[in-house]
Length: 440
Image (cartoon, rainbow, N blue to C red; front, side, top):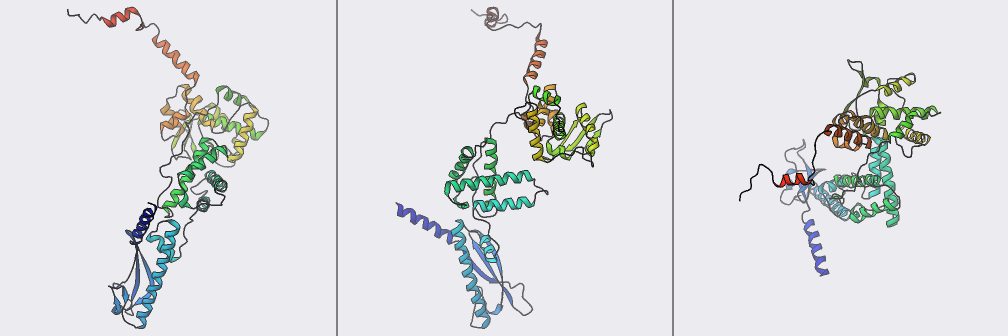
């Protein structure tokens, strides 16, 4: 039985190799001034083919299209046939080498190898490092440094995982399978102790690398194509109303803590993310005919337009820091990491268990808008969301909002007579309605 399997495998390999062919011909449509034609080569593998040019000149009179070689024993014939033999040998060697390393081969891969074009990395960590280097070169153009940092952490975790599980520095892309994916998932859970959302991001970064390998021809099929990492149910992350009130009444002694606290409050009343707050400038402030002030700009994350009115508190914060402006920017916002550090210190100062700057945006969706009766469609527009389902994650209904809605419902139904099915009179009416006559 085992022998039959080996024979079948050999038959399949031979069948694949039978599609490989090298054909030589001359371009008779472009005859040079000396009457010679260029020798061309066609590499065919499966249904694909690639043309390769040579520096060999052929006299069309001695060329035999049936044999794909030059006839006779002239000097030109010997040079042409010698060049054909050497080129055929090189092509065949590249074909065999690529087939051995990748498990498959294409005409383009053979042509690139023949021309000396560097082959893409065949191992996971090297390909990941190549990706990160290209990504880093685009930071500030169309890529962000925080995203680069996440990719670097993923690569670092992968390297640690591979070294622990396989005791090697790298693994070939061909060896990647479902077992590798599941083992890496478990490694992130147990060894690194990461939360599911963070693990989800690292696993998707891994999937991006295998997609890259397929797109550049290193892999024929993505081993993780049908794997979708589990994403935990998203929860609203707004502050409790008491915590928010305590934060607004808090007076930090240090100016940097006070600035970050004020920026957090400003984002709470406007819904601006930290990236949008950093680029907020005078051109984004618009005054309506009624004298009210509005923010009108595009979200940096999605490029979506959003408009939100400036209430009294954010207007006061703008005036408070007007004297610090050095240009058109409304606030001189610190770098992301420094803001994150300071907001945690503000949280400790205000006796708040957990606080992140992004909670300010959740506060806007919950306390400032939805809980005050603003329709969710309007909230979605003000927050610059592309889909209202995203707004539903931010704008969670608070217990206070539920109580107020139930009070309004009670007022509307007050004085109306309501009977229960369990009431004997109502039950009799339902059994024997007057409009129905019994037929004996």
